[in-house]
Image 1 (cartoon, rainbow, N blue to C red):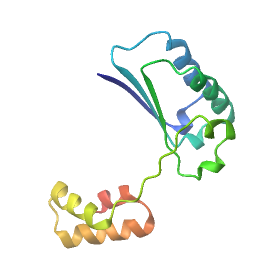
Image 2 (image 1 turned 90 degrees about the vertical axis):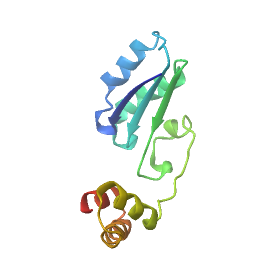
Image 3 (image 1 turned 135 degrees about the vertical axis):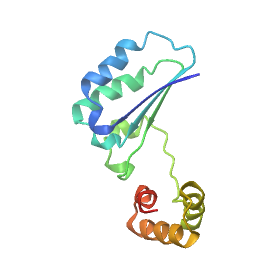
Length: 130
């Protein structure tokens, strides 16, 4: 089983990281997964605290951070504590098929929405447009 905590980078504060550290001695029944979306938006103080937490990451804890900026722009201390994975964009044709099935729209409309959002670099907008 998984205990998942998800938050955006701006919500990743010193107090949140300190709470994680305080809870670290409680070993979860399954795994604890912490997902910080856009970790680059966290304050410098939170990133400094986060480094300490990551150095002593409790067992059965998975920490995942995403960023929309080049990894080189993250604090060097954070760069050394993460394994980096790059993901290619989903082809517009694949997204269009999914949009068609999910929202029962014509393939032409779904493909138009997918291609437009691909150009804009905003995939979530394709879902709203469909």
